[in-house]
Image (cartoon, rainbow over all chains, first blue to last red; front, side, top):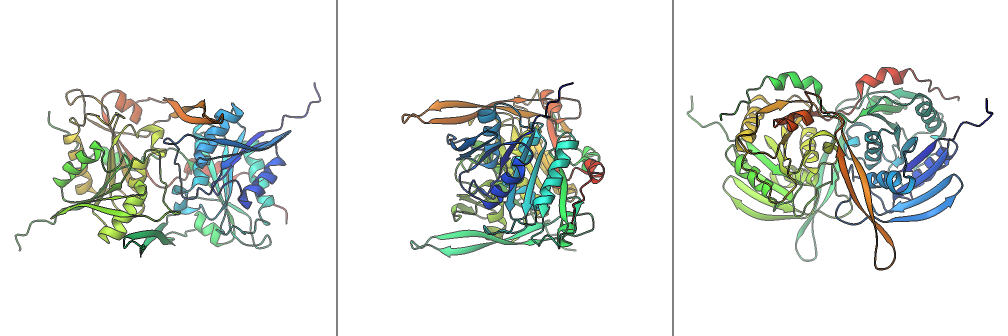
Length: 263
Length: 263
């Protein structure tokens, strides 16, 4: 038997807050403890871009840094573009793990639908790569990431060791509280909630109206077992997320509808 | 008892191919048979925008047409922005139904993840409004929508009469074949599939590389009961879609992971 070290995993890191976000720097530092790292991240903030892909303008990549076991690129695309470019142009192979974040702000509950962070994770899952999205519940650029280290490590170690079921990724959200206050990790379901949007109407100097999207989050469901419950009780929430959107429970009822069309 | 007509439903129509797309015009004509219609659609094509929302530039609305029971607006945002603006700025109330499309191109299988058409539908579902996305499997601007009428009608009528389960919307895809060839409607599940992306690398006049996203769709699953099977057998596929992305089947296994963190 050879006394060879097991090969270090190959980890692709991205985010949606852009290449300069402190949350990305924190995630890069933690991932370099586990393996060789390639970073491909948007060159500007891409919050709210969800699963958008760039089809109408050409994509560009910029190499920012390269050393043994670590390289870093920015691109002019979305988080999903970043994953695609990382896999197909830079690595030209599948990474062992894709991680996204650490997002500045929550991606719990319905926020997953709007999230570029989680879209990058879902994109990797479509390609059969284990993937995790990390988010801290603090929107500020100056968010304090000092409490997250051991939790990001233990979740990452579990995914690398156990793998994930086919078509499933993880949505990890971390309450914005100090290390002593965090009570541990809860594996839970996505809670029901929604944004109650308001548009702020303004008049421009040319007397034309324009609108800024604002809103408040309405948490309609903080039952035990949901991510909203976990987070409001100072647990880190881990929601396994699937990419099959079929509402299986609704199939039988809708199959009974009369949908014959006359010839 | 009053002999009053039942109130006509109020229908919000949008799409992701933009206000000028023939598929939108077809859907508007059909919806006006059912109720009063307000159209709010992007002023330019928004394919691939998924669930993106506009947060970094102000939104603008342009009134294009208004008459009794019908009005039409374009906006500079995404399909999801269009739904939000329609609800909050134009209607200032919930419509009875939101429909999106008719998309030029498939939103079956994994395409739902990238789809602006279906994102608009999911956005309405989050707000508790019954919603349907319609797509024709022909990307061309000159796609032939002549076969769809009776099928769009029967599905719309069923949703208006039966409603939809909470948190569930419909993803309807129509094969690009003539009316005689369509065999009917199948209620089915989302098939597994993915895009195998390629990036076409080019050199610009300033000797810098750029990349165009291209790819081929790999259908890894055409089992009976899936939307891919239905469509390839000339059925119209109707997939009930849920907005809870929790992988419930994965919860138990992941709860067994050792994720204790030392104090």
